[in-house]
Image (cartoon, rainbow, N blue to C red):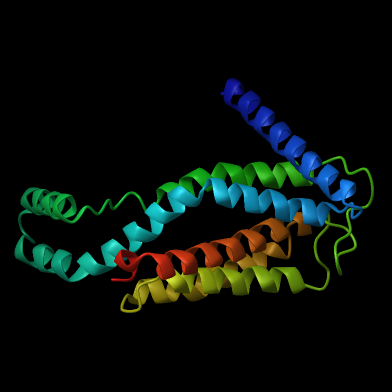
Amino acid sequence: MSFLFEIFDIFIGFLQTILTFFYGITESIGYANYGLAIILLTIVIKMLLYPLTVKQVRSMKGMQILQPKMKELQEKYAKQPEKLQKELAILYKETGVNPLAGCLPMLVQMPILIGIFYAIRDFSYVSTPSFLWLQDLSAVDPTWTLPAIAAISTYIQSKQTSPSDNKQAKVMTVLLPLFIGYISTTFPAGLVLYWAMSNVVQIAQTWWMYRMNEDIKR
């Protein structure tokens, strides 16, 4: 277990090094700012995760399309669980839908998000990390403006991919943004900036995928 902690510490140090690198870039253009550095870091991470995001969106949309057929199979083989699993496997194979693909980007991003949390929380800033109305990115946003942006962007991002005919998904589309907004009032503003910016990039990426890929729309 200690080995895993050591690996994670190295990962946190790596993220802090990248953040310092982007801060150096902002400094070289005459606008040394950690907020801008966090935004650049977020964009790079989201671009690297873009292939996984495509798989996630396609999987989620594919599962939505298959819902009627899956429901039909569940009703038909309600008393034959083994047969149901086989039929569902055949359905997934025939349609090319991977039900696990929708979870992959989330699983990949979780350690990154946790790493970003510790990287920003424990980061040794060379100066007070202010950004726009934020006086200190290492402290909470006292105005709650950034948590509100994080909540709204989470809602829009969830709305883009949530099935309109699924009651549970509708509930989560509302509850998740409220939860994100609430916990964001307790987190360092730098972390909330990362989350909000990540949502904004995700929204743009999803819009682009819908625009360029007709198979995702259907």
